[in-house]
Length: 140
Image 1 (cartoon, helix red, strand yellow):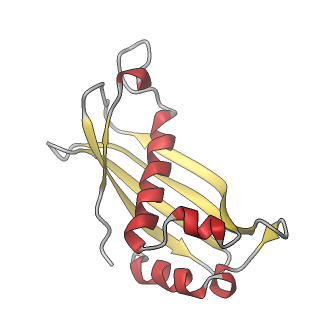
Image 2 (image 1 turned 180 degrees about the horizontal axis):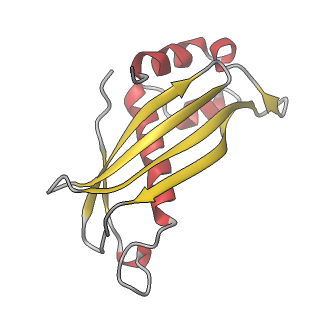
């Protein structure tokens, strides 16, 4: 399954003293793109949570390549880089929606967590349908 990019309009309140988007906001944008990815897969994040699971964050990385300013619109293309029964890694490519210029690249690592039992769980067993959807959109 091919995922569509998530479009995000840069807000004034997200800028720093230099008039560019504050670096930590890219992490928020990646989370928004991940939630949008779940919607595109037909498994909204709320549905996962209602099923008793969560995606715990294990790591975050973001490499800034260009500046984003208030009023710019970026396209955030998510991709599933790695998938195991217990973990996943999601990649993000952030480009200017008009020019295609690369603004940032990043990734987030996650483990699947059983909310009720408060312990890691294998998604492949807990929600096999979702695991299969992830497997279908995994890169390479």
